[in-house]
Length: 295
Image (tube, rainbow, N blue to C red):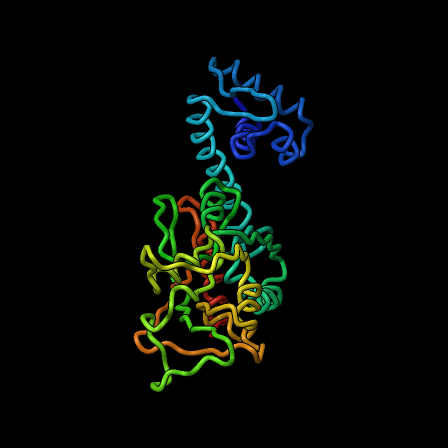
């Protein structure tokens, strides 16, 4: 008989593609996980896993069943959340994802407010790139995520939280434009320092300052704005800085912050959660707290 435990093990195997790592994620021994996967294959009468040395691949049937299993597991989590949290909002565990270009600047202000207002809440934080947050959110590994909008995922709902304008961070010796503000067309793309590929902030910067085929960018493989701002401070180029990060990242006197002329480029920050989630009553007050904190 098919069990939720077997579906959880298959889900972990599909995610990690390795029996050892999947077993560790499920807090069981590798033989125990392997035995449950074998039983699942026998119960369903189909081979789910293609076993290779050091690697696991799912068969076509395995991928389809793992995907359907994710839907079942997500529904079970939402059912448990409904029963656990219907009497009180923002209590118990809440798994929240945040993008790296936001977490260091929003969370230090938000967490004390959350703790003071909702002492029964046990927040579990996950900071990573948008694509990983969305995947984990859709399969139920996260309850909600604070990300840059828009998102294009049919299983997710979103709520706008606030607008985050961009400014230009340049070396302190950079000349200010006579009009006191800069336009995207004034920026030399060859001087633009960006986060490594995969970060949504990189894509947002490139949408504001398009690069043609004969122009080059400074590729540094940076994973944090702090690193990028140090490169700017040492005269290696310029970068776009979200307004929410200015108070933290622009304290270095070697960095000059230059505003953009109207209409200012900006990004929309929002809260995302699964449409099937039973915790919408938690997300609305959480969204309001984020908005109050940013103001």
